[in-house]
Length: 464
Image 1 (cartoon, rainbow, N blue to C red):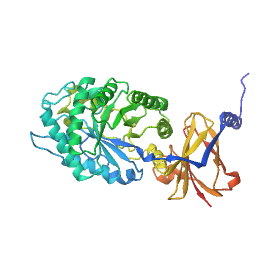
Image 2 (cartoon, rainbow, N blue to C red; image 1 turned 45 degrees about the horizontal axis):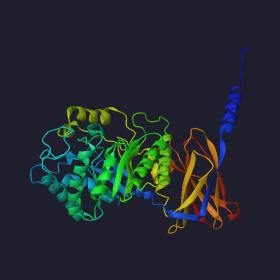
Image 3 (cartoon, rainbow, N blue to C red; image 1 turned 120 degrees about the vertical axis):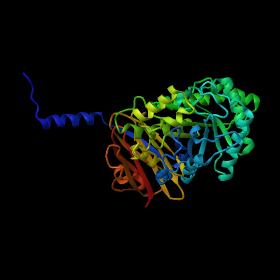
Image 4 (spheres, rainbow, N blue to C red; image 1 turned 180 degrees about the vertical axis):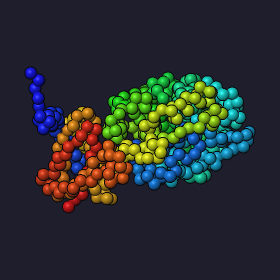
């Protein structure tokens, strides 16, 4: 006999099953335990490699609101910096640099171009210029130009994904021995033009490339300046992202003579197989940044700010037909999930995760959680007289949190915000939904709240 169940009973069973799966997790914010400056602005952004146009110049206000400390920029060949021997052209690049400066961020200037004058043959394996003196003169003039324009332009990165060549969007594929030689020539010219510049690299696609150990050994042995090391990863696993940081920190321990910053300056989900749940990417951003902070990473640059269609002609001038076609197919024929803004310049939900992170100002407070999938960050802003708490559920299962505000300084008012990653509205009030303020007394400074799968919640807390 076939059992018939009324629709209302089916709904009750579903609700009951969901409730049974929902766990309550204790999360504690130690309001009196101030650790160090949060410096969340160092978990920043990048854009470039696609066009000589300033790709997001009409979004300066929105990016400024995120308060990024740095924004990485590719100095690619389409900027045409050396159109003829002894003739230098910086006007096009100036526009992209100025766009970054208008946000209040420092540009990270990534050197990844091959002027035809110095690289007359298009070949990704020809990576050194035919005249290092002229190469150094070009680098010297470029760095001096930008030092004179704005003293905030300090970071100079040598190469982008030099371990994989044109499939990384840049026209060269290095080996350890020629990368170290190229690096030395380039940084000598940079530092001659600006002794206060910060130089580094190699911005690897694969952090385990032999180029990085070779660079560390070379710089320590030869006393060549190295102020930061950089690399990339695209993975939908925050643990894999964390693994790259741990790997680099392990390499650095073998070279105690080097004092360098660590910079994961391209990261995002696995762009070949992006998760379909629209709630995933905003929560993923939160979880990855938490992993970065826990691992002691100095800087990161989420790639990227805006998705962009590429033109084939500029790349055909300095990349092989295969490399040019790769760029064209990847950016023009495949769906993209990189940008905080899509091709049509429409804001994506991940932007609002960065917006919430931008509110974690001041000193970091200790946050502990009883769960491996529910994490949080909190801060105290002395100037604003605000506590800021961000908690998320990096899980496919719903949960409830019991948020204990330990050592509360007095009676409090908490103003909750829920990130809505699903709504079709891009009104900030719809994406960051305010809930009714909650008054708390010092002796019972606890908050209860649900967290949906990949849910993100924020509280702004003030003394009453």
